[in-house]
Amino acid sequence: MVREGLMMLATIPHSEHFEVGRNLQTDAISAEAPDLVVYAEFANEAALAAFKAHPTYAACIAHVRPMREMRIAADFLAG
Image 1: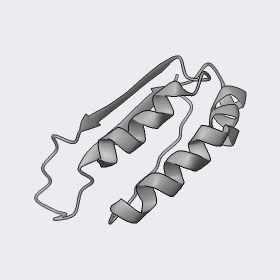
Image 2: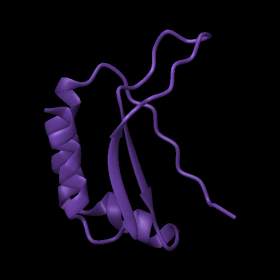
Image 3: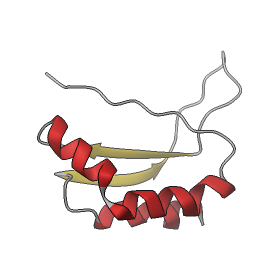
Image 4: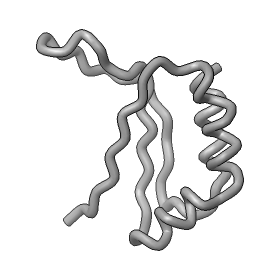
């Protein structure tokens, strides 16, 4: 159900690449890790900001937040 909710983000037009996948990492140091990973690529920071400002982004958060126990987010500029 969480993955289906996160897939709402795939309908937002500002990403150049978007996917949701199961986290395969196992870390002996930390017992807690997210089950799912949302990965997206954007042309620039403006496209990322537009993605986060889209109404579907807010709807996704409202849908998924009650079902999750943790969230880790990272945005960075590649290159």
